[in-house]
Amino acid sequence: MSVKLICKRVRLIPKWRQADYTTQLDLLRNTTASTIRCFSASNQHSLTVSYLVNSCGLSPETAISASQKICIENPKNPDSVLAFLRNCGCTNTDITKIVTKLPSLLLVNPEKTLFPKLEFFRSVGFSSADLASILSSQPIILKTSLEKVLIPKHNFLKSVHISNEGAVRFLKSTSWFSSGETMAANIAVLREIGVPLPHISCLVVRYHTIAQKSDKFSENVKKVVKMGFDPLKYTFVNALQVFCEMTESTWQQKMEIYRRWGWSEDEILLAFRSRPQCMQLSEKKISKVLDFLVNKMGWQPEVVARASVAICLNFEKRVVPRCSVVKVLLSKGLVKKHLKLSSYFLCLNERDFMDKYVIKYQDEVPQLLDLYQGKVSLMKLEFGS
Image 1 (tube, helix red, strand yellow):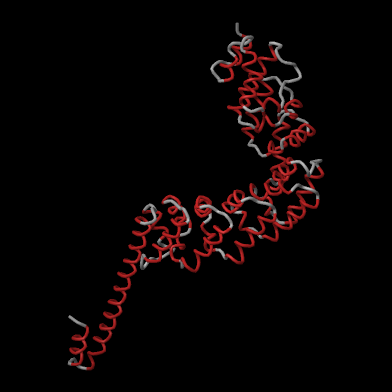
Image 2 (tube, rainbow, N blue to C red):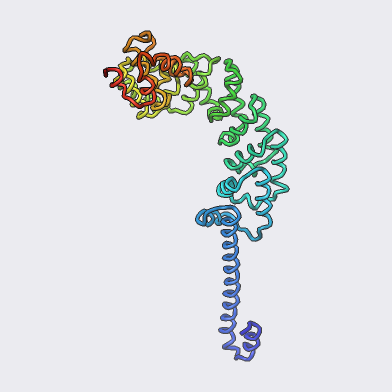
């Protein structure tokens, strides 16, 4: 029965009854409108989920979650956004990552918001592979102001001689969100004490340190200088990175780990000056390496402290095989005793180590290669027949 027909019939009803029917009629109108709106909203939600799954590659669960943030009424604009992303060099996998992280990107105006950024990135030399790598990591860049943020950040990177490869790495990290003024102030502190620009560039690209609040950053720089690190050497940057990422309580915890292995404070600091990263390792890693070097190799703490690179290198693939070979050569008097544990043989490339310490002594120790490759135990080779 139509609403119009109901209205006509209401006029034939006595006035004292019309009020009730009018109320029911209003209720019917409101219910009908509400039903239509719910049906429309349900259709739009269904279209959104379907589009996210079929066109963007999201899983149904992820699509349902993303559909709470956007509503796709017409696929025309999202299709244009996807075409833009493919034009940037993005694969289907990249697009899935991008839409998962930033579903609202599908609703922006490609001509106004996206294409100017594409033109800029290509004008400064970024390849399609570069763009795909950046956008799949940080799609929010496409919704960031070109004039106020992206161009100034790019100019900043160029001012510290960052290559395009370095710029890609920087833009993929969260550091690019940081204030340009803060980073510029921190760089000025480093330049003032003579840190070479290439070292500063590495600090910008690889770490978040350069984005630390200026007062805290300056305090950490003073700590590193006070400990005797030379600003001209790269270990200064490594030490600064450690202090910037570590609280005082964590530093003391790491000191205590080494003390439990019989190290004095001077030996700990000697190891830190040699290889600052030794203070960033987990207790499990530190204990495993020291147990091997001290208990199995028989090297004293001061020896290990002078070659603390051994604590930082890959334990199974580098430390154990090479130290085992040198240990056997020492026990048989084939190399000088002062060699012992040193960063020299640990840091040699594979071919040089094989030539100097394995192939050279195969006649005297036929199973040396087997030891190096883990096919025979150290105990058997050193003390066996």
